[in-house]
Amino acid sequence: MKKILYIILFIFVLTSSTHGSGADSNTYSSGNESQSVSQSLFGLNDDYETPYYILHGRKTTPVILVQGGMHGDEIASYMACDEILKNIKITEGTLVIIPRLNKRACDLNTRYINVDLNHAFPGDIDSEVYEYRLAYEMMYMVDSLKPDLVINLHEALTKYDSEAANNSEKAFGQVVITCIQPFEEMLTDAVTNMNEKITAENQKFHPHYYSFSDWSSLDNFVSKFDIKSYTVETYRGFNIDTRIKLQQIAVLQFMKELGIKFDYPEIPLD
Ligand SMILES: [Zn+2]
Image 1 (cartoon, protein in one colour):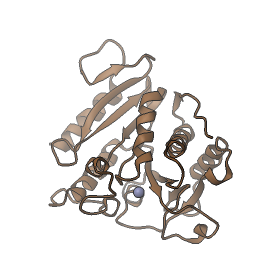
Image 2: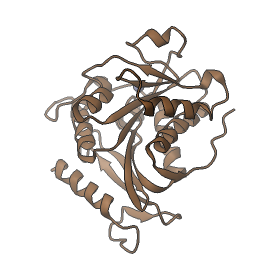
Image 3: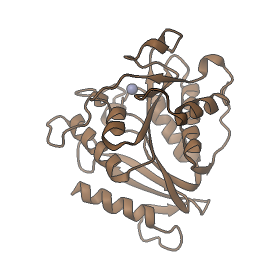
Image 4: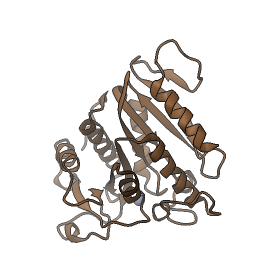
């Protein structure tokens, strides 16, 4: 049943006009009439039910999917999603955003409840453990939506340094992770361009290769669906305000690289 709901929702959202309908109470036009916003529930009626949002301009392609809160204690990831939802006005393209993918873990400010969600992919809809069902449903959503790009938002306790570049078994703060080598042009362009907005040298991002893991979300999106996906990691040693800004800068740059057109206020870093 859930599967059918997704398909209906995506078809509705991606074909609906922003003018004159008003039939669905979850859909409205914002102050900027070219943007349409709808809210729905991921994991409807399951333990992990959490809101997600679809924002699009008059032209609905390209499509980016952004998720935060996969690890509930990496708080800048979902706080940045909240900021983006508050501030963005999309004129062309679609943003699908799930701020708190593992809502139960976010509510308790803990990495996970039963098992690490990012080690539970591709998931299992029949599992007793909700993280496996959640992972399965996330895979289903990505496969149904077929976005041009999936961005996963995370944070790390260890900061990137010159030795980190050779460590393909670990994530670091201030990296954008890929499971593909050599680095794709979209990744190197995005990192170069986001770094132009970041003056402090130690806050800049680095492309980072993390070796393929068949249990990880990113690697499953890439290998099973042939969809581009990267993971943004901010350093938890920075203050929360800086981390939220860095996460926003990274997401917005990937949207630009993809060709999504939008308005957004300046993000002043210290
Ligand atoms: Zn994480």
